[in-house]
Image 1 (tube, one colour):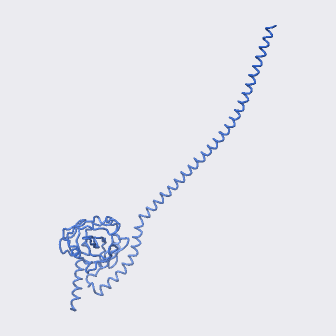
Image 2 (cartoon, rainbow, N blue to C red):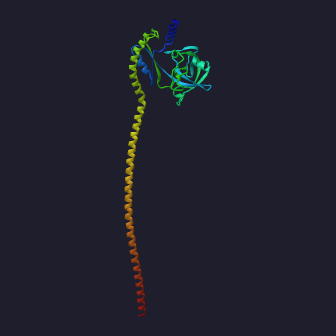
Image 3 (tube, rainbow, N blue to C red):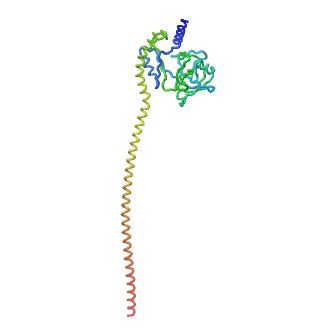
Length: 311
């Protein structure tokens, strides 16, 4: 009985070494890039730094939902022990967790369909929502019944599947895994191993702060450029609007001047028309007087002719 714990620890350590299990895992809310991995790999004591993808989805079967973690299949680190079938080779293929097989009764060749579990479309994360099971296996990341926590579903991951990296369409990696030089030679559950990891971890955390600032600046770079362009367009639009407003005000001033001039001309014309009407009335009076004089003269002429005729 006393020998059993040591045998179990040795068996687990051997499995971890055979599958090249990571020593340190780094996650970030803004994701990570290959540049982050390259920077970490240059640290003293870091043997390898491998970025990977993962995403949590929901799988529904017979009105029952499972929270499934989709991992990016890789042989570089955190390798898998394939119990049956083969590894996924293309988008739409997956290696299924033995626990997933036990919980769903699925087999190699079966097709499963998953959903995002949120209002966001799954296409924002994965290239496809349908996967064909091509193999069954185990992962050194999940040696116990606990499969981790999540922000969707019940919050507790039920099982995992491993899909080809081509299945992911994320702009950045979600995880960065590190192995430490000399850690493989030490037992995973020994004090020497823990001390070695703690020593390297202190350097990792120092660099992590620097890389977080760089990543933050990278994430902001595109929206800040778009904001600068929008501000430039707004400034150009305001300048154009100011020019158009100035032109409109000038046109309005010209129109007002023309209107004022028109009213002045109208008033002058009205005065001239009134004078002309008065002159016309005077002319009509003179014409009437002249006509009367002609009539009177004609009567006198007729009388004179009569007198002349009598004479």
